[in-house]
Length: 160
Image (cartoon, rainbow, N blue to C red; front, side, top):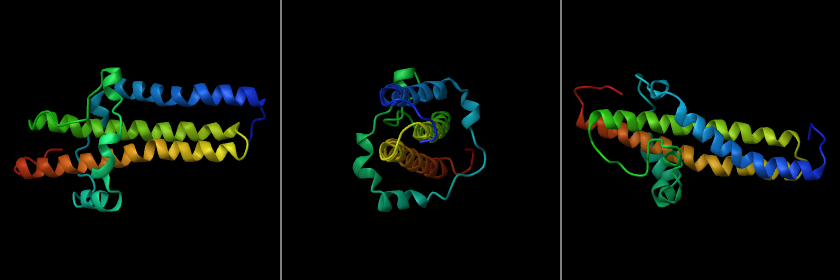
């Protein structure tokens, strides 16, 4: 703990601040232009999708994760609604947006340890990781699967 606050203020700041970090960053991320999440260079090898399936068993639990983007009129990523090339490119960009949002949420929530005393700060660290890592893993896995599909379906275009 680097900042000394009364316990009641620590509780209030953490109880209100952590959910606000999640929701605020998710909302701000949906406000950013899609072009910021376009990437013309290839992502990691599509074979890594198998790594996510085997190592993290993504297919077993990904359906349990919420998709907050529709709460803020963002791009829903719960299901694939089209195989149109433009839609798939947008979907890939939106997985990058979601991953960006979850990395930023993780970093901001980790800042709460500055005023949270030990051992409660350990709970904050574990929470920051547990609440965001599965989403990051799922978004990467989904992106790799869509990119693989794009490569198979539109192999002559190679546009990402």
